[in-house]
Length: 279
Image 1 (cartoon, rainbow, N blue to C red):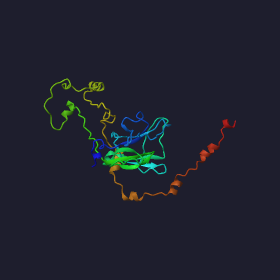
Image 2 (image 1 turned 180 degrees about the vertical axis):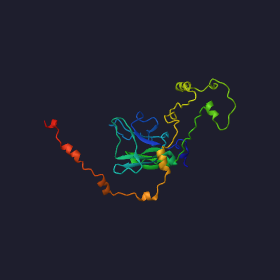
Image 3 (image 1 turned 135 degrees about the horizontal axis):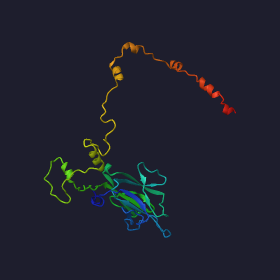
Image 4 (image 1 turned 120 degrees about the vertical axis):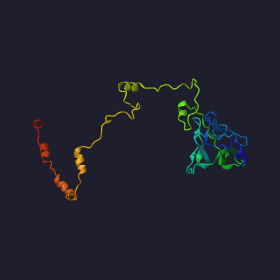
């Protein structure tokens, strides 16, 4: 592992890359690259007549659970590689990013990889090289460099939770010593009874109703199930083989002939002219 990867700053992976006009448009969790390794301004639109430019910025916020595993610089004639996306833009209303060369990144879930992009740097074109970094290409007079390596994600810390007396009573380790009486640990009182439950109990003490309504009393509660005697006789009798052999399977034509209906009466009634309509 190189000295760059061993430092605590570079051990955290980059989670997003973007363009920003300045520090005011750059999101809070992003770091703006304002200078190159040569000490020059990293403004991607340089000139005396241009008032606004844009800078490259990146984030190492792991709250979304995503990391950048690769960065590429492609031209406008190249198709974006599969699984990559163009970086977002946080620009002022009238600012725009050049389209001749664009930066695209590959973003994957943090748990699916062990190596990712750890750092990004810029240098002036044909001026210097950055050791241990990979050259991604040049754009608008700058050369883009990236550092890849293994990363370490922060281990989530479990938040302490206060366990109530009722939850401690459900522990499988057995009941502990009695807790001293405190304002936060009052003695157990009688169970609370809702207004609906109290009315039902006073009306009929032997009747129990669940307040949630899921297991409430229905109209079928207490009604015994029995089969009608008519069906009991049919179910007990056995069907002989001769009865089954007498069953005739009808064809489609037999069914048409048996249930054929010409609708002659309806047709005569339709042709009949009512006196009120003829008058």
